Image 1 (cartoon, rainbow, N blue to C red):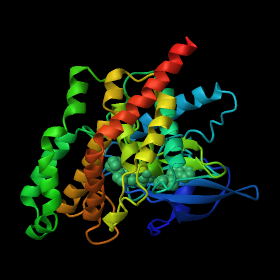
Image 2: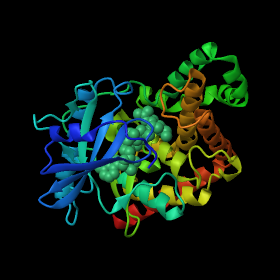
Image 3: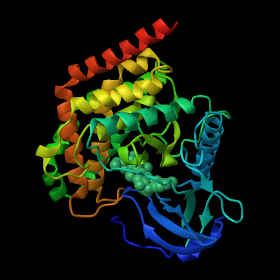
Image 4: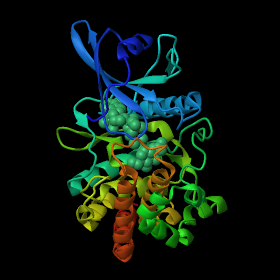
Length: 381
Ligand code: ADP
Ligand code: GN1
Ligand code: MG
């Protein structure tokens, strides 16, 4: 675990409704945004783990609204899971631990926002896939998550980060940052800058179709990278979708696209050796199969048509965000070395390049699996 210990968790833990005494804490996970810790709490002589997170309130300026979204969604998931025989609602959804004041978050004396969750045991997150089965299991879990949230009551969720996946607006921001960027950064990233500019006319399809109503707005996760789903230690099946900070109204294509970005390559997001960054059609095939197994029943044709495109779109968009952050001086994503965001951008753009070259094959895979689903549904009556 590569995060250093920045906070004294012994002071934070008593604010939450744990059933015991704080023992210790260690930095946990490899997310780019929050500071995550695994806590050990002594519950009558037994050590029980919890997750505690300092929420990045620069990225999420309205923590109360974000936590309201998370509680609404996890409550709904819990109710649904309770109705499914054999499900475990303590494990298959995040469970917020409220504070002793019965709040979903705690503000410490320095103004930091904290929250806590039940720790999902006997499962792990991975930072990149190393088998097609992992792509299948992760996609099936994300598809199921979307499916369970189809009938979330109570009206739309708060838009916690406006225009989060509005790729054309991300492009505008990139151009603004570029105008003021340091010359040496522009020089270092000149190939990537040109790559981004070359694609500016291909990035508006999803937002345009959402605006025209051709694509439906749904409850979407918006950050479905592979390390935001926990896979079981025993058989690798998807257990729990985590990191619900960005849950809000969106297109399923944002989520499917981010799955493609992170579940079709057997290399880290920040891999420096681009010869290791290989988009895998085999992984893509398994990802589509897993996703459609959970999601085909509710997707509309306009969504299915753009599944392959969404992989290129979202990979481009995240690459563009890394590039923008590099040019701006690493103000958003956590970085651990010089040029880290540029390295991340390069892997993303390399993936886009390869997906562009294999566009027809990707579309054929989607069509084939969707047809199989439609045929089976017709047979079943
Ligand atoms: P970030 O927003 O910074 O990505 P995450 O919420 O994804 O933060 O948490 C970071 C990591 O902590 C995850 O990738 C996962 O490994 C671990 N984690 C988060 N929540 C839980 C949980 N409830 N149980 C077990 N591990 C968790
Ligand atoms: C961030 O929080 P984390 O590490 O799961 C980012 C995503 C990016 C991702 C790139 C709120 O996700 O949008 O796709 O990094 N989250 C936010 O790895 O900006
Ligand atoms: Mg995360």
